[in-house]
Image (cartoon, rainbow, N blue to C red; front, side, top):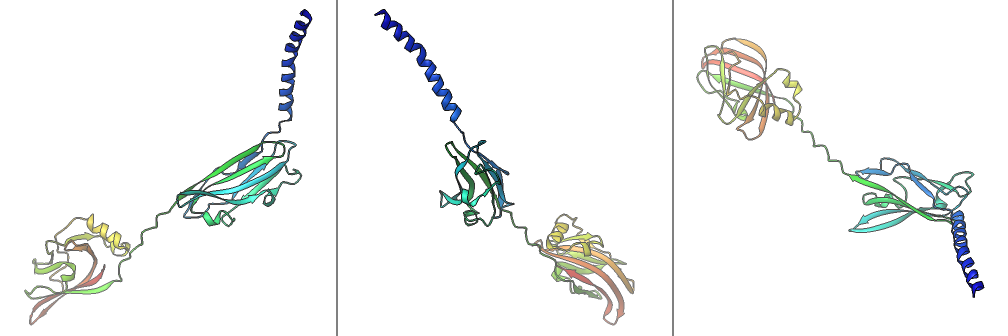
Length: 283
């Protein structure tokens, strides 16, 4: 009985030894998994265009071989997540001298499995299996951006000639389209008034050539000071040239004109003193 007990004690003592040796041997033969590297871990697809190529490498542990590689695109369509095969190890580039131990990849906008789903693409997934080893998996993700279109630029119309004429004490003609009226003069100057709804602003001479778009003209009038009336043209000089620029919002309805006054003449006629103001306008 004592002899059997001693044998039992010896067996209990050596079992952990064999167990440790077994675990150690298993750890020593374990190969491990491949290392998957994306040169860019994420990309932004802007307006359905990749910014560049998707590149990287797949490397087995030292001395091991890669048994299989599967590359798929992951995309969402009709609220469903789907995948499409892009490549296997046969389609990738084996690094020279690696004996199936390392591959590189290069995909772009034209790659099958990417081009068809570019607007729904969520990620690129790579699964690599090492021969007698483990499986590795890695994904590269995508963001999507849509560029807001630039607002269309509306340029002012070509310059058109205008003529404002006042004969004697009559109301002047030619100002109606601008929301202006000319019904009186001071002792020396014509008085150009608004109809109380039109906004009239005085600009610099340079604005005639520098204001090119409707948006610029709108800003100039909306942000300008309403002068209500303008009296910068002589009512007594026989002939005079000007470089005066005005702008209006006709009746406050968003119809804008840029006005360039360039000349005036004063003539004594049988019907009375005739004053003529000429220039150009754009809208």
